[in-house]
Length: 58
Length: 369
Image (tube, each protein chain N blue to C red):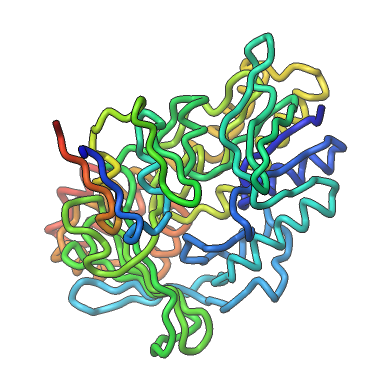
């Protein structure tokens, strides 16, 4: 899987949502990603303060 | 149909709702969290002068009165800046509820635990309502104007106006609320260091004798803030130029209205919410909520706050260029009154003058002028 969230690590801070250029992320009770919108650009991984998101470029 | 829907019951949303309700408009505020103001993602500091916009903050919202700031250089030397009017460290979960209560007292409705998933448009293509979920039930509510005061963490601002935060302009932060620590309680403590907190700072905001918010923010990079500490993400502005669309207004942190030097956003949120309300009220009275009519908010905000915050942003860009040795020299060269000027978003010439006091900083000072 090219995009991965570790929900145990995630703090629900919303930092990844704020930087997502394609509005692919949404924070409900946990982080939700819209696969159709996501371009796997990786900024969410960069913004995450706790290393909860992993993006592998295909 | 109601007049205005506000998404987000933080300082910007409730300030906007309160003003509109005072003008007699029907306002509904939705917040996704079950408890307004909690969990906080905030160091909770605010200046006493912010009460000019907020009204008098009740005692119950205040965890600690602050008389100034202690600024530490990387080598440990420090400087105390005592403010003529001080500040507070708040209890945000009490403070935000007070703001919401104030909005409700004037006639606005506030509903927590409500997730807004999308906005709806009318036949003219104007934003005219929201879709959401409350207690497991989906609903749709129509309004003449939709205000997005969600903070930065919602994709709605991106969907409406293409607004998102640039990753190189945010600080990735972690904060603990800690107890059993020894701090001088009536000062906030700021540690500058390119080693400890590259392009950011460490803060200790006391909340009583042995309790404090201890946080650290850095530019996003491979080594995570969590490697030092643990929680939260805060924004530095890349201020949004155009904050309106037909039937839609963006305000507060959702529009990146945050002080760029320290990341504080409560006061800017309240001002931005109130300014948005003024324009919205005017537009509703004239029955014209087009982008053109609402864009008066752009004009007013940029004139009153935006251009000022832009200058503060330039200050930050300069400070970011300083090495730990420069920071040591800077704290050495600073006078307490300079810090107070900084905190107010001083003129660039003030910082340049300070930098000129140290030969090694003259080059950076020239860049500022």
